[in-house]
Length: 212
Image 1 (tube, rainbow, N blue to C red):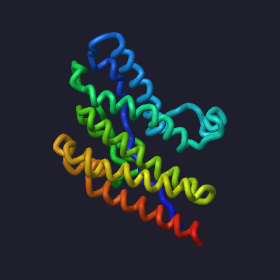
Image 2: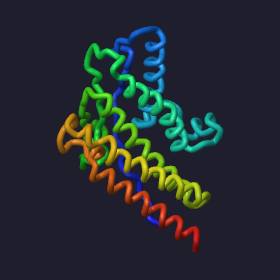
Image 3: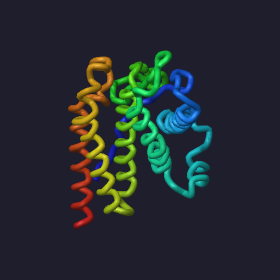
């Protein structure tokens, strides 16, 4: 089965406790924890860790780089969801400066090394891009497992499809008015719907190969 990775976006650092004022020490500690988990995700997104993949794999009980990324996302996303859910309790004191680039826009070699970032001061923008990245990583992990654990691979393809579907139908319709028009294809419903169908198709092909 032909396999190809979808180009990934990049992001800039966010130190949330510097831009958000909180109601008490507990909330402040939660925001600091969120920043710490976000930093770990930044390293996954931007590939900026000083540790080589081989060393990181040895340090993480032999799990692959993709698995490590999924673990980091699994720790960050619940905290991010909680922040979104309780956004009314957090007072914004300055711009959030949430910045992401697109991995899908055609770029020159120089532009790939120094991509153009788009800033949207809306925590839902962060949520959308992180969920998109999470879906990409689920698909990547599914691709890794096709030859060794096809049942798990099929499950991950279906999970990735469901995440893309959630983005397209539940999150993006309300977020679109806040986004720079025509700049970030990652957060367009039609693309996420297409990726959802792609993951389903890849899962079905894997299933048929397993059956044969």
